Image 1: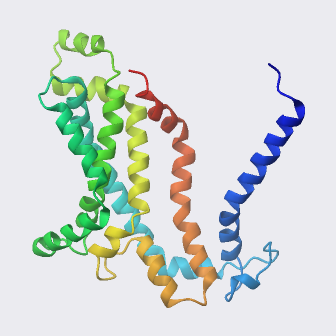
Image 2: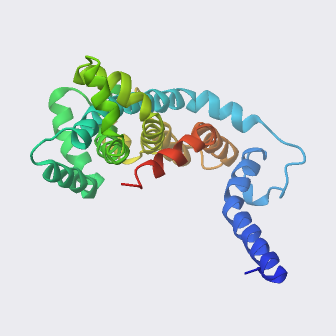
Image 3: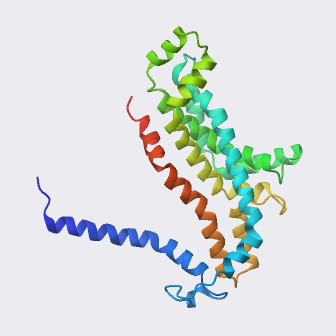
Length: 271
């Protein structure tokens, strides 16, 4: 059945309008970051004379926080995948009693409100001396990254043909060798998908950063922006410049890894 030309044009127009509405906040954020210091509501709709002083202020005040977020996010990705990959392989390919109960427990952990976890961690961190530390934030953010990564990786690893694994065993490879040399390379798309979403979870985390850091020694960029607004309410160009810089790593990561994410997200759909 051929689609009517008028209906096709209407769909295109509606799509363009919706896309413009969704992208307008991003445009205004970039536009406001290039305005002179002051009230951005009085700025031009287009920065004909861009002022980069906001970026200079943001780099001076928030550069360290950006590095902190990057270190914590990469550490959380490494820890989450390091724990989730073997767990997902065991749940997907090995005959283990109670697999369904383990999966149920993983799903239940995803339902626990973050504020409950943060408050519980604060008391434990205070006793262990992990407050205001990179290790503490990495461990806290991994509480969300590990369960999600297990779910993604298990769904993909279930579809790995057992013939491949059995052939590796026949060649003399042990379980660890099979996991390292066969399962992980085959699961590349799923690993990248889990890594990307774990990075995004950690990069945008605010709750753990607010609860588990009390000094400026270790302060992620989300908490830096929050406190920056209260201290510099007149320097909206610097605030917007900070948000632009904080958005760049996530945007670049999604653009670079989008084809792997699409393949990894659908890899476990067929059972």
